[in-house]
Length: 591
Image: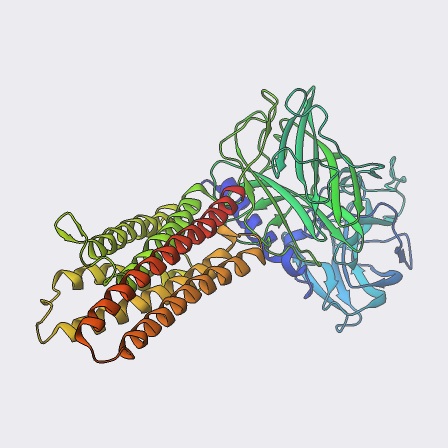
């Protein structure tokens, strides 16, 4: 890696850690040059704190008292710089007065050239001593960054200028820092919600659900409208924490250009960010955005801003005239940016937002995972469930009917079970193809899924070695076959329960839970009903008087009655299973 690239990577790594908890320990050497904390928001414009000194003239080796005071603050960072070249390195060194509140830092090659806090404890006043170096510039100005709380801070608050004897005053004394002004933009408030006017004709829009109204409380909306060399962006959706979108070269998080609108204390901050894998976003303090506006009404967060199509001066910002996958996510924020509550909306293809205007939707679940869920539902809600009912209760009903040279109940059972094995096997490999390996984010779902897959393969292999009907080991086989099958069915239901709530296939909650409980109750209820019917049928035959002819007539009548009842129950059961299956498939198609 070239040196500039390495330096940038190191800077990104540092900003990631500092953006999580700020600098509670005061170890802020990373901010020596910019004096900007990586807190993910813009600095305030009007300082509340002041810097004072006990003298305005110095000679090399002199000691000057420097005071920082104002309303309660948590953190601070003080430096002295050449007043005529404020971008130059810190000059001179400091001595501490109270080591409980302040500590010395080394910026660049100058030892003890900066002072910062030791903890987040509230403080109102800081006193330190500055020692003028032998090669001091003619004019020195003291600068301070002050953090009132995580997202409320001031950068490079200008302090007094001290000068060496018999030198003229600086021609342009600093009253406000260029860094603070360049990273802070006026923020206005939106007077009304966004609308979809112009989507597909004048601006590129993404809506979820498809074609939803941005004024609706359930609509996620993102639009891009090109205006000469810039793009005006609108984003809205139901969120009490944050909304974010990202531009990506693939459908995976990592190495992406992100933009966040974060609600904190009923005030919305707009920030750019860099997504590094599945780690929290690295928020940038420099702001490449203009015309920032926001609105927060009834739980719907809205923000808009403008950025140039190309930003060569800002590392990590993608050019908006390229093609990217677009992510749209929401989640909680409370000082920190928490992981999104559900799978982000991802466009189905790569789009150029400055190209042909389109009005598109997206999916919160990848197609491979949708197929995984759909195939598992087909296999276990239809094939396995119906196959078990047929084998358990239809032997006497279809024992004299044949299909392809075998008893009908056996052939129907075998076809359904082999279909389930095939569908389960295909479905099983899809998540591994999508993830490219094992997923550490899916909890117990993949472990139970592997167990179900093993039992699913074990069942037909065991059936291939089935003893003949009257063999001594047939009972042992029947017991193992039933035990493995029942265990697989129970674990499959548990696995589906867990899988439905995973972020990658987040079916509507609590609808998914109630519907799965309904299916289990439907299957168990049908099973119990047929068990009761079989028991009553046996009891009816047993009470017939001991007359051979009468027994045969009664048996024939009972068999006919039982056959009709079971066929009616099976028909109703299959129809019910289809209703549950289509409900699940429709839900998967909507996400």
